[in-house]
Length: 262
Image (cartoon, rainbow, N blue to C red; front, side, top):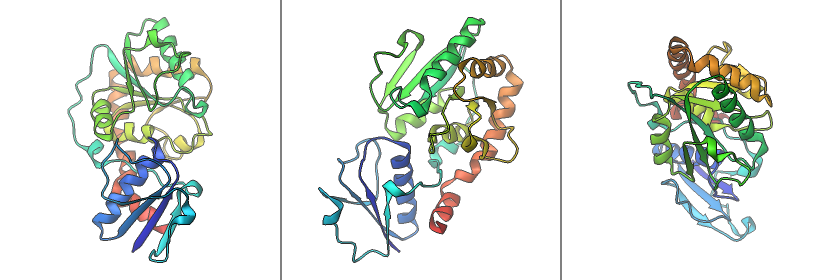
């Protein structure tokens, strides 16, 4: 099959990351994949796709394609890089490393609530290190004094290494966020997760026993779940095991089958 994906922006994002994973998997199957873009060359991830750079999509001749996918109109199924599924021996840090991913500027990421949850846990004497990741430089409004590490614009390989260096993921996303890839990656990596009770997170599995959940837009309740998690080693171990079971649905082979059925 000859596929073309029309991508208007190549900046680091969950959707673009997923597209590049799918492109490589489709090429591995023997398909021809072109990514037609009005954006700049991607530097944060390697890709085996054929790239076509245009000023406007009307310049692209799709006569040779079997299928053209307009990314601005398409929500890809979640997919996780295979490297994140690699077995690891969990050796927890002291204090625990809490990972918070997303841009402060994007309200649907709920980053302010993530900060609030960590502050709440610390108020009740929980010692944790906060590890922040964002595609952009930190906002002046962010409480950076609460952060032990701040990482900006990581490549895929760097993000994989960072995730595997953490112990817990906090996902404060709001229901408007329809592609919170870091939460799926956290489960696949084997991080114990605290999430907001948004419908998308709840849809990961019928049994909602793979994470601890708190109402969205509620930093205090999110912090309470974080306290519960960081103070209970057995609970963290159970969530890590269950989370990786749930994440099996996002392995590349399974996700590609879903993509081709769309």
